Image 1 (cartoon, protein in one colour):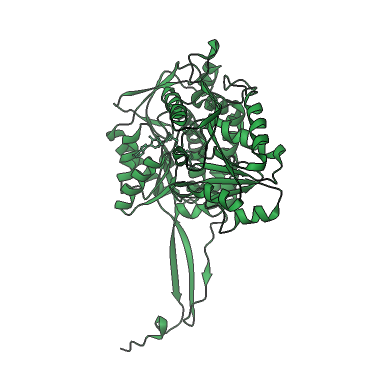
Image 2 (cartoon, helix red, strand yellow):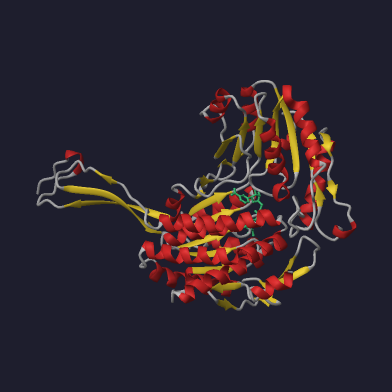
Length: 509
Ligand code: NAD
């Protein structure tokens, strides 16, 4: 299966680490071995981008920007339309590679590639809607308006858990806005990045466009740091952990660059006494174990009204007993492996700490003991009952450990929900409109995403995606998130034969 996918995308052995369009820039850097989390066997090796190759890529991107910004926005949209079409053709194979390299189930991998297709469709429409406002000038025979220009070379740093979708959220919008992109994918998922680069490069070649419109570089933290420090990259869009975002945000701010930060979440679902448990239980289940608990929007805390606590626990424990864990490429799998051995160790340590701190394990997970999966990074998920002061509720453990906390009063539930440093996704399960509206009011959830009767994960691309507090404040994808990729210019034109000053100031010569 894997060989078929690699052959299909013409990937073999060692691949060069830096690409502008179809051209690889040979790096003298060391090799990064890509392992499948399914069995820890090597899939391929990628050459890391060294400083020299990085310089070459940025120069190529800068050159491409001078041409690309002069292509009319709807024509840029046409290129993105072609890319979306290509993704439709390649959905099956690309999804399988995502599942193989990152470990998420095939169903979720299809969903991730579909998200890429959706954002391309959105960006095509957007390419005719990059609107500015017009204002009435206080001076006679003057016209005032604002317009939006592209920024230049946009740097994209992405995390392993959405190895391809996050790049497309950024790049599809950035391209129609007239920018060119340099992407540093996660060092844990460089292969799917390489395939995406190949696909967009084919479109650029077919349209005789400069190759530097889409560039890919490979490497870990150090390569991301070059980007953050680089004045030639006016915007760094970075997705990953809070410590990474703090480092990137501070470095980019020092040079007065812009950063768009999409960082860790610690997402809660409130299940009230009026919840429809036939909706709440599957939503909690998918939210907690989907992508093996490795979504930024994964449900990490269930805040449950005491009157339904027993039933929620019993139904959820029952659902957990039926989880199908296994090869992500098997269509029946609910939960694939964690991304790597380090993630497994971190999860096991998280369970130990939870027990030491007094968490009551309702379902105690651990390493999956199954002969045919023993070489992979497979684990079973956990549920722990804790009280609201439990210290680890403050932290995002990027694994399938779900905390349950009981509450008596909705205000208390919202306070528990908001009492963490992160602010990405939140949801309330209720059939009571008063409870729902309270949760959505300014007294309610403090998160960037607030849902009613759907889970915390699985956002649609049409809305602006992102979170508050330590989640970084960035907004990507739909709504008006495109403004992050452009600079605003306010224009005032005088078509009179006089020179009136604003605020009525007299300044006679
Ligand atoms: P990570 O922070 O370890 O790495 C993310 C990316 O940042 C990688 O490409 C890495 O090489 C790079 N990087 C790390 N340190 C850097 C530095 N100092 N300067 C520049 N680049 C640096 O995160 P991860 O383990 O790949 O992903 C999991 C984390 O990402 C979780 O916290 C998750 O919640 C978060 N995440 C957030 C969103 C969101 O939209 N809010 C989406 C996906 C993942």
